[in-house]
Length: 356
Image (tube, rainbow, N blue to C red):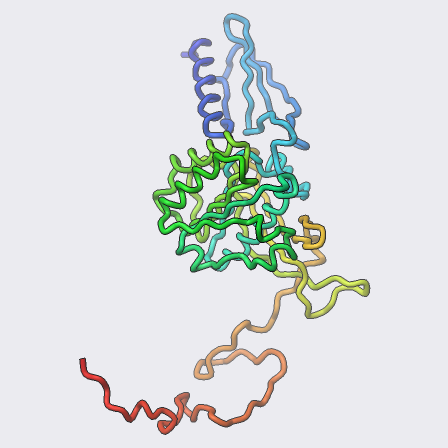
């Protein structure tokens, strides 16, 4: 039995209202098969590039019902922060939303540096538009103890961020960090708010991310959620990217690539979630002089190092060959054969052990 036109319109209105609260449009809102008066069509959205599919249905009263599919909302062009990479911005539907919660994931703990570097690159782009406002970076004591703080002297040199433009807030617990992030996200005194957490804590659920997303929308400021070794979970963030470190290319000079050198910082950015639902993976380089991203072309990829990073143990089988030049050091104080120093070098061994 076909759904009545009034009931169908009510369902569509409720879905649009829920999507507006969550900050996302439903990816698929279709009328039942064979619905009367269906007029499919396509319209160009407000994004710099991309097509939003729109279908128009007429109910029994003759009024039009517009259904937008694939999550491409009509929004002003200045509602997004473009990365400058055409392919990435197109896949994201225009770039990162300026007034929303965005997730930046690192699959492993060792990717924390790449995630932080990518967030600082985005902060540099944000501060270019919001001059005079600082960025607040929130984290727990565990986060800063594990990953450390950004190097103050490198902020200005690599990202053009003055040390006074980046404020840190260290919270003892995750609940405290979430409370600080919610209060800061509603303020217009910050250009952006960065919340860094570790893993997938159950306290960072869909309700908590909805509050952060709603505060960001209300203040018109971006909130970046950095996840160290976090799993992809349902959140209210319309955008999620997975960032890892990419091998640095050789430094480019007038005479060509300089062999054995380390070039600009590079990131591998994969789209895990977006309004367009378009997949993609990009290798980006950060230009510290122009403070802008550049997409690396295939010929600039660095070849894999055929030498093992760490040689195998001498007691293991088939040890890896030594890399580089072998230097001879004085044998004074070297351990004896067998891997242990002579007993006379450890006078503490002759002392009686303490009891209790």
